[in-house]
Length: 363
View 1: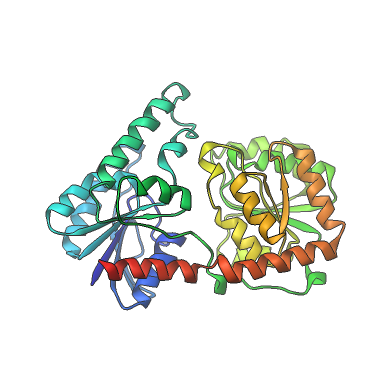
View 2: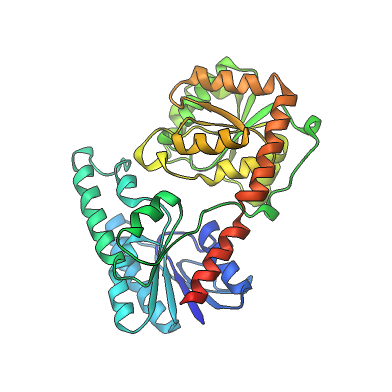
């Protein structure tokens, strides 16, 4: 069976799309092609990567033109199954279905709730746009061959409108994370890896540093870029080791030297039911987690006793949790051990890949 993954938004080597789903499908013996914008063409880990060249600016123009370009490339591939990764690609799904193709939509995030947090959309219009987006997404997805959902929450939503929905969680590839069991080799440092946005709680995290005796390893890209200036102005910035965007090797190094992983996202509608990969990467690396006290996250952290839950909007609470773990290294080490054991048992990409392969075989 010939499977074509298509994205007009993500980079070709996106972790979920390429590194996890495409590579897993190719490893299972499927003929896999990935179409992406400005990609590195060629055969990568068994996946044929096809590039669409596009460099024009403007969000709306990009959304229109790139979708048309990737659609033309998709027709040239002539696959049996098309696996679409962006909401804007839903406008080509009817055309593909009309040509007798099977179409799978991969819902990485809860789009309607995500729209409510988009700062580039005027706040006056966000609720209306969110409702319209949900209606459009539901109408399109009700006719698709299948839907892949990145969280149980998203799965429950699409189960109401499509009979073939599979939850494929974005858990880490454990073989990419080196476990350092020697706690004495770790530094008195904490780590945050991921997008550096206001709603990711990074301002409160940097603020908390003035109340604790530690350094923060901060890795990721700023959005907007001006947000970095807001962070630099904080008193806690002097305790930040700014790593910038790092590759998998760099992430591995930061996880191996740190003693606490931070995931204190704000309680927005988009985050409350999310499953951030960084939380599971911290667990897989064997370090305790300081996480936002959301009901879903509480069920995971408390079940495995692998971290401390805090109010993400309270820098003092974050500092107290960090100090509690750094001041009691044996407690922190044991929490890290329990988190790693849980990751090995329950939160591994290997299990999720099997679900995806089973879906493809059922088609």
